[in-house]
Length: 109
Length: 111
Image (cartoon, rainbow over all chains, first blue to last red; front, top):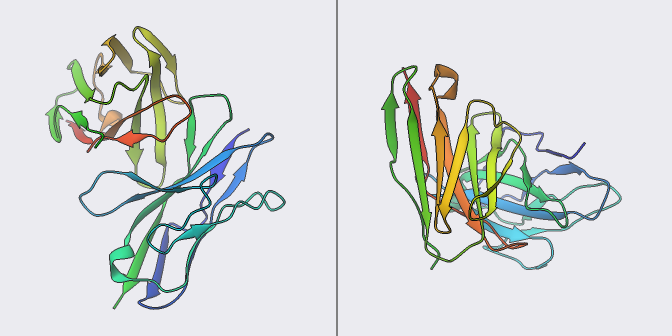
C-alpha cells in the first residue's frame, strides 16, 4: 500500500541550527515527491518537488530510492521557518496525492 | 497568480443539516480536490474531479458527495452533517500532472 510517514509530530530547534524533517514513503513504482508548507494563518503551499532538484528558502530534499526517503534539510534554521510541513507522494500517471501526517517545526530564538 | 477561493472561512452547523462547501479557481485547472485536515492525521483526500461532471472517490468519501457542473467550481456536500465531520476542509486545484494550489480552508464545526 502507498504510504507516507513523517515520524515526528513536532521538531524544535534553535535558530542557526541545522534542520532535518524526515519523510519515508512506501510505493512500488517511481513516485513524485513533494514538500508542502503551511505558515501560521496562511494557506498550504508547495515548498519544493523532487524533480526540480532546486533549493527553496534554503531548503533542499533529495530522493533516496534505496532508503525510500525524501528528507527535508536546511543547514541554518531561521525563526520564519516555523510552520507545519507535509511530505506528499503522487503516483505516476494518477491524480491522487498521499500526504503524511505533518511535522510542526518550531525554531526557537 | 493562481487564486483558489472557498466560500467561507468559518462555518457552524447543527447535526443533521445539509452543508455546502464551495470552491472556485480562476486558472482553468482541470483537476480539483477536496481534503480534510485533522491534527495528527494530516490531509486526507475526500473526492477529486478531473473534468466537469467527472469525479472519483478519495480515501474517505463516506458521508460526503461532490458536484462539478462548471470547470471552475467544485462543491463538497455533507448530506446530513455529523459531529465527526467537524474539521478543516481544504480545496485544491491543478493542471494534470502538475502542482496543487490550495484554498485558504473552511473550518467547519458541527454541533
